[in-house]
Amino acid sequence: MALDLSPDELLSTTRSVRKRLDLGRPVPRDVVQDCIEVALQAPSGSNSQSWHWVVVTAAEKRRALAELYARHFDPYIALSEEAAPYPSGDPRADAAPRVSASARYLRDHLHEVPVHVIPCQWGRVDGADTFAQASFWGSILPAAWSFMLALRSRGLGSSWTTLHLPSEAEAAEILGLPHDKVTQAGLFPVAYTLGTDFKAASRIDSSRLVHWDTW
Image 1 (cartoon, rainbow, N blue to C red):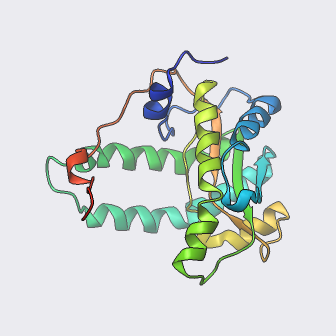
Image 2 (cartoon, rainbow, N blue to C red; image 1 turned 30 degrees about the vertical axis):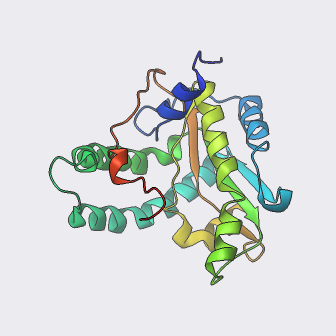
């Protein structure tokens, strides 16, 4: 199924989907493969194409990854809710309760999401300088975002999560991944969405964020 979305509609309505993931509908392998094929057209530094994609469908592995995610979720969400850094009227403040509730839902149901996709990059940049870090992440993030856009265009959704990464080495062991040679960029829960009528989100006014010629 291809949704009838213009490029701007696709870019502005690809949301982080948690509560509206259809946990009971299977996701065909070829659909995930098609989305990865789209992602592989993204640019990478020096055309290295050093990405790898771990697609997890086995229930016991999804549950093990979800347990790692949950281990780090509660301290993180408690800290973020306690901080409450946004003033009243800020769109981020208005959205915070919904985002927290949605995140808690995913924490409780991550193991039920039919497919987990972990985008990876060959190599590690632990302790590297800004140039090396920017070059490394700039070679996987465009492909990962293209993957999310490809999902949306086909009626599926996901959410870019990173909370399993404090236990990255344990996740690597679960997946048989060479942790000393490969870096995990996140964990994407993938499922069809309950409805496809996603809208553009409320964002900070661009006048506060755009700087012409100087900060």
